[in-house]
Amino acid sequence: MNRRGFLALGLAPLLAAAPAARPDPLPPVSLNARRGFFPNLPLVTHEGKPVRFYDDLIRGRTVLFNFFVLGCTEGRCPVGTANLRRAQELLGERMGRDIFFYSITLQPKADTPARLKDYAEAFEIGPGWMFLTGDPRDVDRLRRSQGYVDPDPARDRDPANHSGMARYGSDRLERWASISVRSPPQSIATAILTL
Image (cartoon, rainbow, N blue to C red; front, side):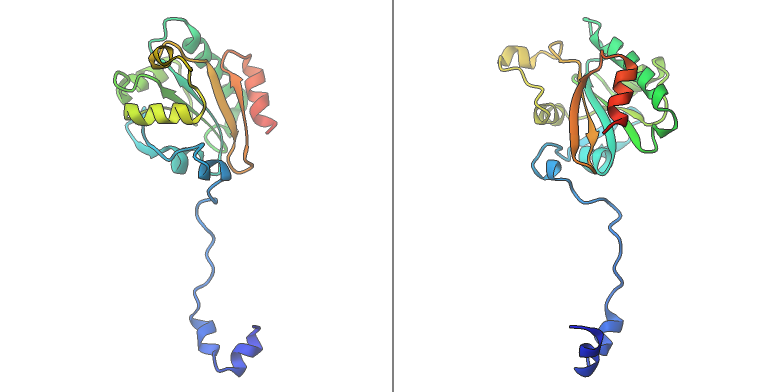
């Protein structure tokens, strides 16, 4: 019904009383999140701040996230972190503004926010990159939701058996892919920029 129809029926007061439409402060929940690909689990940043995985870190953003082991003995994680650090430099001012990195420990019982903060400081991590920990069950559920699972239960329980892969994409565009953190930093930055 149009405005004249409302006036003819004497319903003009309803028009004045209707609340103005407000834009949603958060982007809509993506299809991937509704399907459980991004469970909205609680985590804690390397600065001790509580966050929700989907609502606070992924929703509406362009991100790269990986799972890592702070005391990695195979050398994959330090090399991967160094490569991501160089990719962070290549992305420049976009980091922390419209591109974000998240590294999630696979040993949340041992890797406290303070230990993660020391690790981030050792690599001189700049803005837009958080190191995260949480309840071991939540971290495990998050890892599994991303498909980082070994079919052998004994190997799956071993945090040393990790892939060195990162998931990157745009929640807003619903485009997602994976890349090795051992890829050249230029390749990592280019992959993110060409979403």
